[in-house]
Length: 608
Ligand SMILES: Nc1ncnc2c1ncn2[C@@H]1O[C@H](COP(=O)(O)OP(=O)(O)O)[C@@H](O)[C@H]1O
Ligand SMILES: [Mg+2]
Image (cartoon, rainbow, N blue to C red; front, side, top):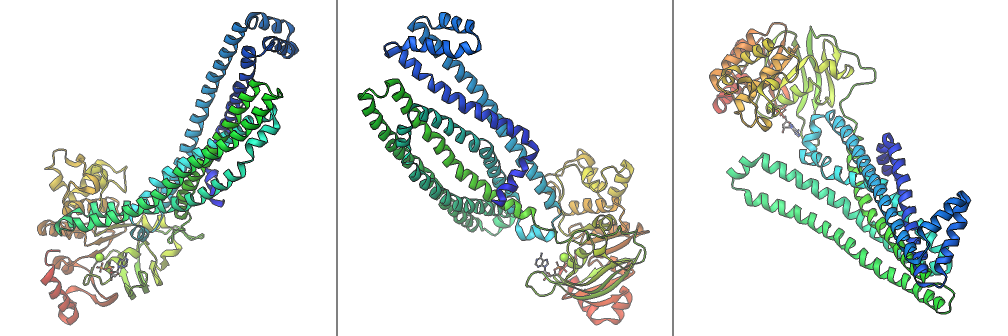
């Protein structure tokens, strides 16, 4: 219920359109009953002795209230013979039906657009809030799961909102107008037709419960399927090269079967409710017909009224059936909304403190003091780091794979905060600064570069879309992007393909470096940023970075000997601890651990 109210709050901006839709529903329902009630005079005129005269006097009586002249004109012009009365009344019913059709169209159009608009707003909000989630959130949840909030869950929300603004108003109104007509004809017969209603109610409730349970499961399985799709197709090279297609297919089949199983239960409930309802309807309407027939035989009820009543109580079940089928749709939408709200309500773990201040340009040092980081239940990735990095220095961070280098780097732009200890810039704890002012000074080139499916130029200018042509070219030149871009048919305007798939890993890395340089960071972090670049280019890029280091602090996670040699400081990390700090030459001379590490590293990954 809480979720329902919250979901409906997305319709608030469109409340006037919703109100108009409800008004239209009202008119449609009224017109339906009115055109149905026209059956009584039609049948009377045809089959009753004195039916035409009764109609004429009724029209004179009611219309004379407005204008006696008009009443006479209607009677003389349209009702003077049985045939002309028949034609006139059928034409009237036809006109009412056309009018009803137009109103119904407007109603459905309003309802549909309002639902789409509400769902659109919700998804915009969701996207915005996901952008602020910490990096680890996406690794944990899986991109497929996140994406399904916008596909399956989004669709179910649209359906629920449509049902809510449409069916939920339209059908009860329809019900009450038909009920009013039936009661007007004969209260007793109407009651007889409705004795069966409580049973119908129980049936609907039961079906709704089963539908709710299964709808939630269906959405869960659908999002797992989407995750499997993502993992498999993004990793298709791995899947194929290890010949694990069959395993992937089996995994997909298994999950798909679970989805099928839940879907089957939903189908079964839906398939069962309609026939069950129909049988109950025949029971109710049949008993009314039986009683009414007996009254007609005794002359207590005219045939025209009996027929109209029969149609009205028969039609009475239609809105009930539609409302019943609306329940699973609303339940499904609530399940989707629940999943979306769960994401919306996630407080980003990393966010601005209420009293956060804008960090001034960093100019003295970066300091890690007693920093510990642990991922879940695992062993600590960083187990007490104490380290000072002077501003404007060029620092190399080395260490075996898994020693915590990337984790250390991720602390600076606050992809996550340390579990213990403090990371500070110029003595100011990063957690007291605004994210915008912190990240505005930092550029991080990650190990895995993902590009946007746009031109190379747009990817380089990602952080500064307004950068001048010279600045973009200069950054592209320094990162040796120009070198390969010039050979492409459209140069810098070449589109890089989805996730940069049209480029090699090394080319993507160079674009990422150009992007970082263009943003003119005070602190540049390179996480094995040239690991896929060929040796010669990597050396040249390294030199370019070194030559332009003026006014910038560089932390490079690297194993390149040339980089180590001209670094102001080399930091060796092992198992989450700093085990050596100093200049390359000194460490090489005095530190056995450092020598061992370099020997081991050059043995296995001399190219990176
Ligand atoms: N997202 C993560 N979830 C769980 N464990 C992680 C995650 N990222 C890194 N780790 C673990 O933390 C440790 C340090 O990883 P990392 O900082 O990436 O090392 P490096 O960059 O030096 O190779 C490793 O044991 C790694 O398995
Ligand atoms: Mg790493």
